[in-house]
Image 1 (cartoon, rainbow, N blue to C red):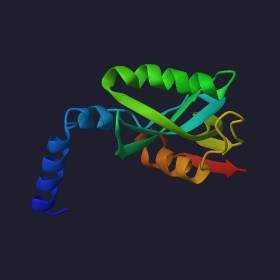
Image 2: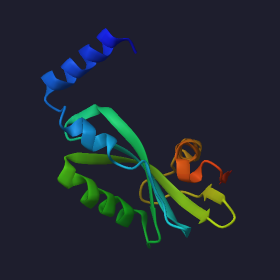
Image 3: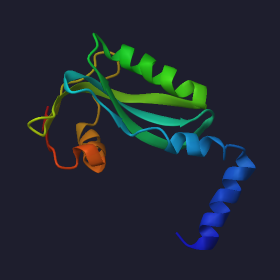
Length: 137
């Protein structure tokens, strides 16, 4: 991006009134998954009212249903002015000692997540860069 393009982007951000929310959005970790087996959601996080600028995140937990993960995520983000849209869910097995992650299944509440997109996000996160990530449909 050239300098004048980035200046006009930030001018646009300031004019629209959500420049203070942008750092909050960038401060949201892209990945939070537990060790072991659990459910996960693929979500689009964005500033309230500004769905054009979002960040795709992965959230997982050892819970009974995917709705619990969604509720926990909203509780974490709403005080910062961030909301989320669920893109789907599935199951995830994070074997930290073996450096392997298995992504599979679907959410009966939110539908099937794009497991390949989830894999790309996990691989971009430094914690999981050296992990073997397997997708089972």
